[in-house]
Length: 563
Image 1 (cartoon, rainbow, N blue to C red):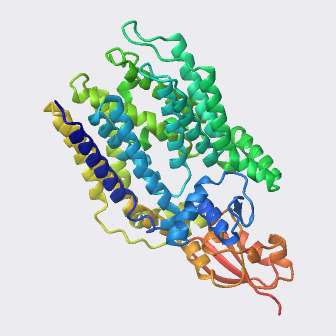
Image 2: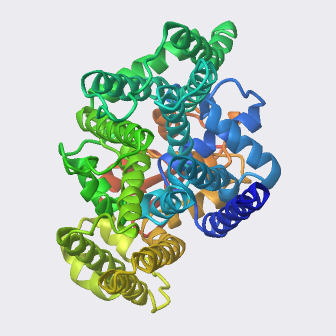
Image 3: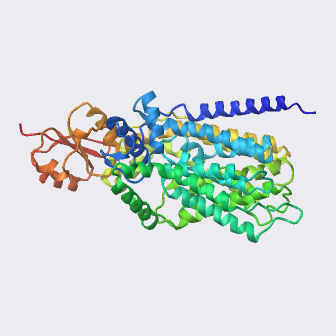
């Protein structure tokens, strides 16, 4: 007889190891590189302005209402900044912690569904794929939003599970709680994704019953739906109510208008071709995206004789297609919009790996070919980039002035970066070798470990160098002026001067025209992207403006008060 205490101890040890490994992968290097425009700096600045003003109810940018996002993620950043200061580490720490929690959630969900091996496989599939790993080291909202959506869907799966016992009200309440938190993180899109996925799955369940030998999913009752509606409304709506009571009706109306615009127009110029997110997932969730491909076959579930696994599988497949099609329809195209797909996609990859390890499925040849091809592509990209300083002399004559200035920046590559790509190819080779030896456990372990080390090294090394060509010069300027009482006005869209210039309410001004021609009371600094004609015209139209210097594609000008 198996000792339950021994099993519990083994499970706790496993979870501790997962948490420790995730912390070692996601936390080191969080503050090694500046925050990137737009989203990272945008969100960190909202958190910083909460600290400056002491107003934690209203989200602000430049100390005016920012109606694009609810406050939950900013509250997490505020807590981190209270502890560690206003810096890059604190801005990104909430997502690193989210990474640890996410992997623990996947382990426990997977273990409950199919056992410890499956839980570990799901952890490996998610944590060792490129974009899922990358976002846990970022300062954007999506990791927490996706986790809440996943948990909302998960408890709906539990609610409709053929093995559910009891009246289902706890599952309905938990599903609503996490869906409400998703709404408090990113707005109505959280409820929309949940309702579309759940509605589609319930319709599919109604028309596609389980085989007669297996129990059918449980229907949702009116009492359960009522509990869901009440909890979701309270959790997701209490901030809006508080904001309304404190005179924030205009902010709420602008927030709703923005959500409509986001779905109907390419907001902020983020357009893209129709299959944009298909390409992002295919290459960005490597290697899990390729390992998952056999699960999309029409016969994938025919060999699955566990009713709960079939039920869970259908929900995950439905969630994947709902999210992917939704953001294919949405006009705005941003890489992380389809990041909710990472959960079902890595589940399918773990499902394929689990069946392969049980010798119930062989990895098809086309998957191996694609795995090798995409690995070669990533190895080439990461291998060529460090040679940009040798190649840029050929690029300079054919690019615009601003890009030419960017490329004139000096980087400090270590020289061994191409070996990272070689290591990735070695991991893929290991995978093929042990599959041929019919040792799939060693094959998947080697691929996951090699991919994780490759991704961790690339994320730590490459942004440090890439930033030197993009934003480093302008951020250094903002930091140099942070302690001075001044006005800073970039002539392009950015949030960096707010955060790195440590803007205060006293630094607000009445618009660009006043800074350029008005009776200013303190120094005004202008930052332009290099364009000879544009800079000359700006100087002609701005009396008293002085050129400070040019660096890496940016032109820095100053206009001083007359007295």
